Image 1 (cartoon, rainbow, N blue to C red):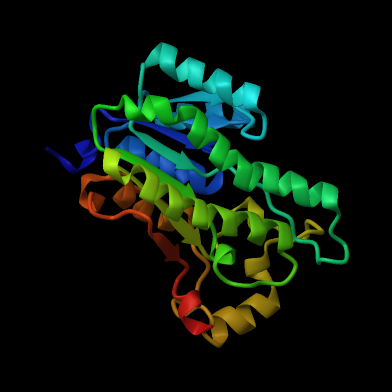
Image 2: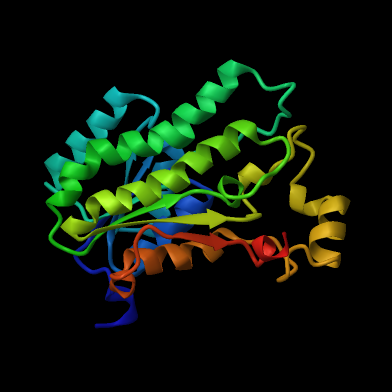
Length: 260
């Protein structure tokens, strides 16, 4: 079996797969032989991503904060495949306000998408995963901010912290069925989420980031990550190589978590 066939005959669902990390993961899984469902609320972007990936990918419209929408996604997958093998819960939104400026409305919105959304998708799609005839994998995209503190990140960090412990608890619940559940905690990754709140550029291009994280080595590898840096570890957790790995939170952060 060639390198590009390690996930042959497997079906993967990647939420938030239209852009950034999700798109890179979808591309990598397809390259490894999987048929990939790019499930995203940004349906035009999702269709574009699927077109660029090729015949092994197609797009489905979903709002993971809405149960009816997730039910429709489950129905579409069931009608087309009857089952699937790999779920990557990647969809999420960001909030970068300090606690004093945070509104409860925005807090609940971030929790609804980033935490409840991952749980809702998993709960709704799990019957289809159980029908999968290949190694069954669930990979949640958490964040380094789910295990470390960071200013101006209460909603996001709280939601991702919930995803971290959802991963651990679900891994225990599903272990007897041979379904592994793991999470990846990205560090500073160069995606649209890294855009500064005022829209003036990316945080990685600011002088403070270059001074602290690059020059003085707060990130030991001295660079921001790229979406492809997450896609490789995600593939590992979806592959047969990770059959004895479950309940783990893999921080993919260039070493920043080792410095504090």
